[in-house]
Image (cartoon, rainbow, N blue to C red; front, side):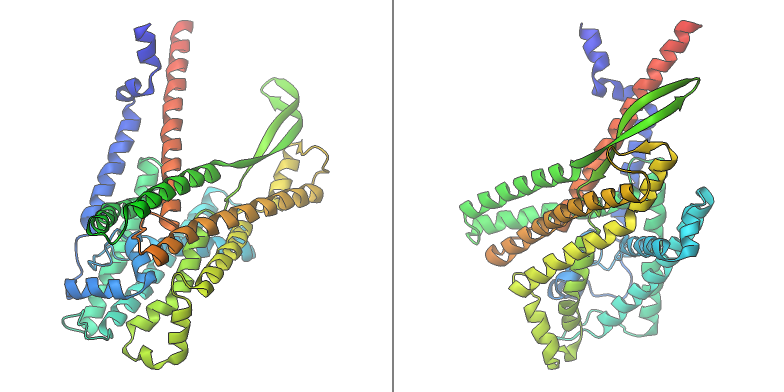
Length: 441
């Protein structure tokens, strides 16, 4: 009995899973390289002034600094993180849904996928160079007596563009290697590592506020409860599915024909993922960031009024932020999921939804179901992102582990766990097949 329990325990079998162990070690090693690289600075920057600039620069700089694991505050070669790659990937996906030539590439299998990957990489180079130049130029023009750059000029701009672009391209390559030779999505794991790296500092800051009386014990307990409830809610919503029944009139399996087989078409509630909150945060925080970067921004009255209205916690900010998240959720879902293409695939495979005619009627039904699911998912995203904003504005809590960062951490952790479970199940099946072959011989 003890031996059987040991053999059925996945942890006991982990030592025998050489491939899984190697993949996990590769992921750990790659993340260590990423964290070490985030401490290699681009020369010519005053680190203390850079930190103050990030603190005064508004929510947009803080958000990018969070995604880069603090690399932007240190002006590291990894300061841009993988955001240029993510932006280029989104643009390529959008063009693949709009341009006929790119739509044809998506249908050409591996060859078309290689071309799309090539376009994404070149787009990453261009976006990285543009963002690096804008950041370096903005740092040279900082007002309020902050001398961030020791020796402004062409030399600093050139070094910044080359260093930051090279850092982003290295992270893109590292993420691809983690996806191929590790477990899970490498780019997502890099963002995950950057967010988690800043969590201890946020916890220490909260602890200091509790000890000094800036945050009462009751409010601290409320923060802990809210974090736990929001995390549980995110896990529930990210794993929730709407399964549409699909019947197969006749399925051929080898020499046998299976009649009246039934299956399901799973549709996630939040099919857009974390892209809508990222887009909405970037756009809504841009005016505040722009007003703090330039010395003459205080003379632009309309910009100052817009910045005040769009400050976190203000009613216009909350309403506009929620509205943009909902709009982007519908927009991005329409890009990543094509109801008509799904209906055509079902028709070609001899499948049909009960009560629906194949073709256009099936596509209309799937689209109506997806619209209701996207509405629920968009409201869920808006609620999760507004809760930490409300707590920050009302209680001045460093709610670092919330909103977009919480969504990313939950989604990546769930995907990573699913990948490990799939590897362990695959190993068990391989062991059973080997035993069956040995018994036959």
